Length: 214
Image (cartoon, rainbow, N blue to C red; front, side, top):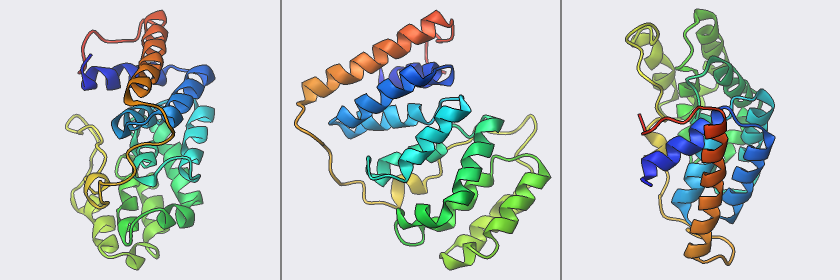
């Protein structure tokens, strides 16, 4: 199975998944010795649509369970869904001071991007009100805050799917701990396969999985 298909299976299953599946993803993400496997699982953990589970996933970012360079996927995994956007943005507002301590210097300048996916003007007004006194504390913050308004509406037929901003991939040194625990790569692969297998099974039961990645 290709990496793209694996991500699709995990994420689609998560969108309709409940606590059992989330718990499995978490266990296997903790066990995983390969960064790319953890990344797939963490991204999937951020793709659940159950509000209670979404809040559990976001709370993990505040812990030291995972390297923040990997756990950041929990904040950007599913901003296409309106309810998820509101939950994630509320989390950022409530935990802003803690979140920025986990980032490299001045990376907090990019947090206004969390509000880019909002269409309603009232939501964007809240983004501006929250960040107007905080953005200047980071190099580039005011520019990023102003950028969305200057580019006009992101809604309507021409709206493009939300993508994690490039700073997630470039502002941190990509080198770092690549393994955890004593599991061999083969054991890690088997653990990831178990999570993938359950995700596929869950998706087929719900008739949700596509035949190929879109």
